Length: 68
Image (cartoon, rainbow, N blue to C red; front, top):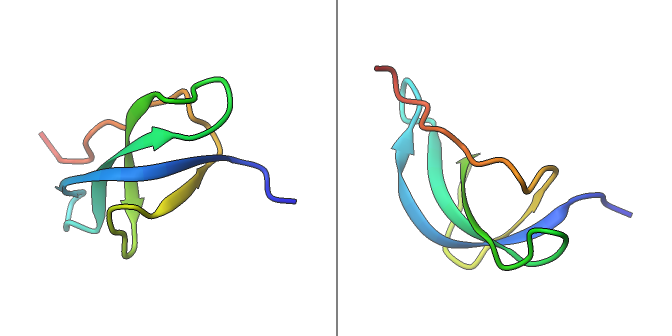
């Protein structure tokens, strides 16, 4: 059995990180205490709208990885 909370990708916002290696996405949590909540997460690798991610922690929101 896999531990984690499923979340569906709703919007791909922009690339982030030093070299654009990650993408910031908005996901809707599908189960657990935060069900229905929309949060921002950083994702590496290929991703598209409608994909389901398994989040280990659904209570944290991602900050941009851009250097300021």
